[in-house]
Amino acid sequence: MAGINDSMHVPRLYTPENLADGKELRISGQAAHHAANVLRLTAGATILVFDGRGHEHRASITAVNRSDILLAVHEAVSTRTESCLDITLLQGIARNDHMDLILQKAVELGVNTIQPLWMQRSQTHLKKERLAKRIKHWEAVIINACEQCGRATLPGLSPVQNFTDWINTARLAGTGIMLQPESDALMKQLEPNENRVSVLVGPEGGMTAEEQTMAVTAGFQGIRLGPRILRTETAALAAVSAIQTLWGDFN
Image 1 (cartoon, helix red, strand yellow):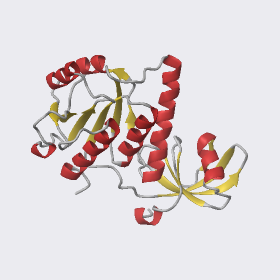
Image 2: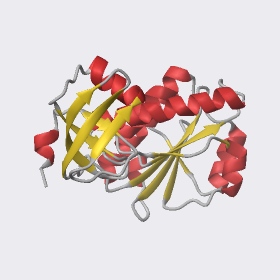
Image 3: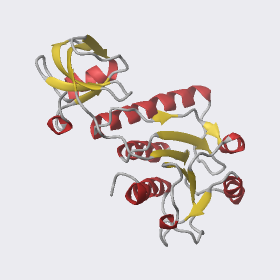
């Protein structure tokens, strides 16, 4: 099994297919376009392919066609890129580019599950067809981030829910943290429970007082990240970074 250090600069592609040494694989769609037209990969090039379930293999391109590329799958590659913490990001849905940034960086920082939530101050509300299109876009953002950062396991993207519906049925496991600028509590004063941390972040404009009360009732503890008010995209990433620094794989 090849080592991770040998693979850091090799192009990586995601496939939902099962991987095995000796398997022939066809990749089409956006992944094939990216490989052929962005990375400019040609027949004979060596790449890495991962299945989103923790498995990664070396592969070589055997053909580049107009709509797909053909791969020969080779030996497995060891991956050690998952956090020792099970981190769930409960994110109030933000505007398009802000949400994309949050998803991308959450993947890079080791978040395991992302739960998008409609909140009272969410500035984006989408009807059924547009929402389905947006979810597909978010899934692509997550895949691209995994390809870039070396993760072989795709973080889960939970179905979009209304915050009130979600919080009324939520069963908090581990430590629940709510970002609350007016709180006196600091994250370093907490201790994670069972290595599972859920961090709740409001959208632009923050959470309403009612939403904060509901979160506290459900077991979340309000904490502040310093004396300054952070934008939602900054707050989410700062919180996950602090969690990884205090209890995760940043130390």
